[in-house]
Length: 329
Image (cartoon, rainbow, N blue to C red; front, side):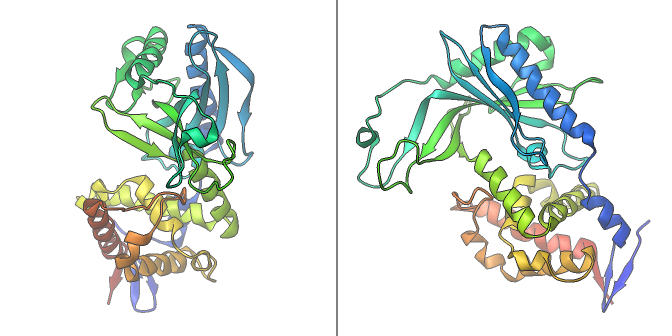
C-alpha cells in the first residue's frame, strides 16, 4: 500500500514523514557496535603478540569512526579503523556488515609524479607478501571466532550473532599518493590503502579521505548530504524488493559518490525533503552524460574511469529511481 503526496503536477510515492524517517541516522547502538567490532579485532591480534599503541581513538565525535594503532616486534606495524557506511554514518537497515581495515604501515606502496620515483625520497625497497599477511590476520581471527571466520577473495568475514554485528575485515597495505607533492616531502601524501585479492587483483582505495570529504560536504550542506544519501539508499532497497535490476546492481558507494558530486546549493534549496530530493535526482539525470567526469567521494579517483558497466548501472538506476518515486498525472 503506497502513500502519495501531490507536488505540482507530480505525485510522490512516499510522504514527507516517511522520507524524514529514511533520512535519520540509525541509533546510538550502531556506534557501540562499531566500537565493539574494532575491539574484537584488537583482542584477536593481541593474542598473537601485537600490542596496542596509545588509546582507541574516536576521530570525530559525530561519527563512529574508531582507530587503533598496534605494533609487534617481529611482524608488522598496523592501523585498524572502521570504514565504509558505518564509519561515514550513511548506513541504513539494509546494510549488514561493519567494514574494518587492517593496514600494514611499516611498508607501503608509493605513487609519484612523472619522472619522480621512490629514490627521490630516499625510500628503500621492501617486500610485502599480501597473501601471507592475510593468512596471519585470518589465523588470529579464526583462533577467536572459529568457524564464524570465513576467508573471502578480498576480505575476511566474521559472521554476526546475537551479541555482535557481522564484520568484514580487509587486510591492506598502506598506499601513499605523492602525485601532488612537488618538494619531495616524505610526509606530504594522500593516504590510501592497497588491497590485493586472492586472485591477484589490486584495488586502491582512499577510505580516510572519503570520510573527511563526506563529513565536510555534510557540514557545508547543513547536514542534508548524508540525509539524502540515506533516503536514496533506503529507496534502493525498496526498489530491490520490487525487482528493479538496476537497484540490485548499484552499490552504496556508488550512490554516495553520485550525490557527493551534486552542487551544495541543491541540498540547501528551500523546501521539504521531497523538493530537495526531486531537484537532486533531476540534476543527476540532466548531467548523466557528465558522470564520466565525476569523482569518488575521496576526490582522488574518477568514479567511472573506463568502466562502461558502472556508467550504465548509474544511468539506469537514476532513471528507474525517478520512475519508482514520482508519478506524473
